[in-house]
Length: 377
Image 1 (cartoon, rainbow, N blue to C red):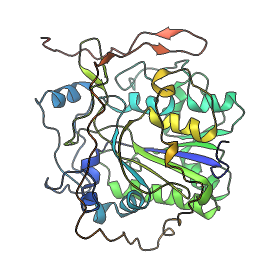
Image 2: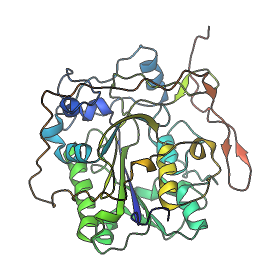
Image 3: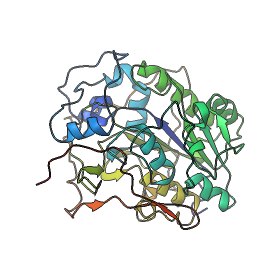
């Protein structure tokens, strides 16, 4: 591995919240977040529309989305602790402006043949796309995906489908505490532990805390890099307009999607609020950098700068408070730090979303299975 300190990478994916929706409490520390929206009750009353159609209405100003915010310190204290002691990527974005499945696939392999969730009444799809777990297997590096019901979403990859390395998520804590995690681990949860509305979000946060604590209990904190993110916006508003990098054939922005939280933490991770622009394709790239993997063959991933520069081999951050111990957040700076957001990347023409690359050299058409009614100039 390029960095002998990093022995394992754990990618944890939760559901359906934006940066503004979860992290208003980071404003005094200098994060670029809204602070004056109504406080969101926990649990939320219902799920809200957040598919490609809802995103288009939000993007064009037809629909404001749900403009509320959780009380970060009161409802999500462990997440606040991780964000303030690890690297908080305040301008991280969902890979595509749509809902769950496409963004889960981007986190696994940087591309998606669909812009919607698969039908629950039909057999699950199976695509022969490259993935980072598959790349690890091809290069002799151990991997495991602790998945949701029906092996969602890793079971959609032909190379991974049926593998014994697709493990029910209920097994993660025991395996982690026993020191049995391989160098690459992905972790998803089922409702209500995935925080998908209308779940009590503290349930999901506590499950993530339990999962991190299991790694710490096994002595793995100092050699582990955690990447914790949320798949998509979930219909919650966010005040920051994201760069228009890719569009569908109808001309509507696809990438980047709305901002969603990304926290990178572990013994060797440089802490601080990081304002660079990033997106879900950077997660597989960072995994590849940390584990010394070669190119995946997906331009969106291979050309991504990744986040490996946030690793400092000389750092030895303390582990989070043990499970059940009180959480004390760092005091905010005095006077409170003002946000200093980076502008979006230099304006370039938005590119059409490219075809989907398959293993062995084939391609699928670009994702275009959610037609939108648009008025082109």
